[in-house]
Length: 167
Image 1 (cartoon, rainbow, N blue to C red):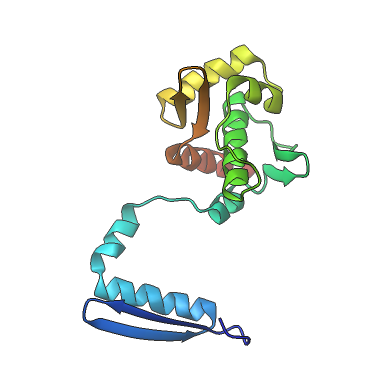
Image 2: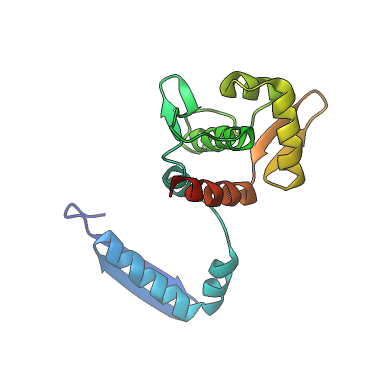
């Protein structure tokens, strides 16, 4: 990147070579156009691919979560949420903190969820069973522990339901 905030990129693909320069937004548009013309299957794959970046996650859940000095938390909000939503939001904020390299883990066990959410262990266990059944949460077992993490499908479900609550 040059000092005047200009990006220069050169792409080689098979027998084609293109060079792009300009502001980052313009270059990104030109690169996407290049790929969609030279590799049309990328466009098809993008239509069915779901992959949330850390920026996407922060944008989707900015009303509900915060990364604080005390750690990642579900933020006190005015909207009443079910235990399922609170558990999933806690798993999302852990995932975000992990992707930001703020913590070294991206899943939680029952005791951690109890401490972080303030919910009763029995309620957490019941809700997690439902969430795992619907494939919104992964249950990862080892010989001495069980941990839970949010799935891509869980992120989609949670964001779509929460977006309706805000409206």
